[in-house]
Image (cartoon, rainbow, N blue to C red):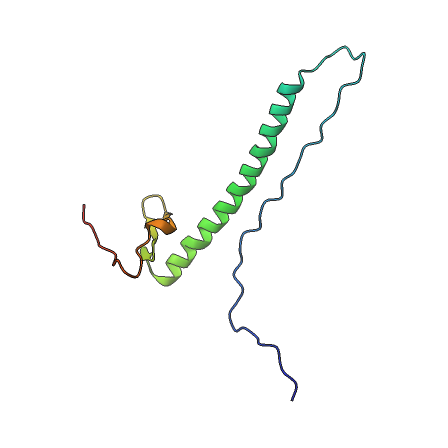
Length: 119
């Protein structure tokens, strides 16, 4: 009997695609041109525009992921979710979610149990 490849019964998660860095073409100045450019200013402006465009693309991805998370919270009937340093809370007035993920160094280890502190 031939070995069959193991098949996973789990759906693959849709992970956000990394934003490909688009560079804006830069034109060099030709000798004898009347409108002399200041190369440093133009380079800084082009760098800024590239980063701004990347941020705007990330913002659209963030909005999509936030809506997906909000839909999942509604589907599960949760207004708050906490586990292993991840905290998701629906803000009802704004119909949005707030997410906090602790840094790995902030998470409790097996030796030290997590202690709840009430403020």
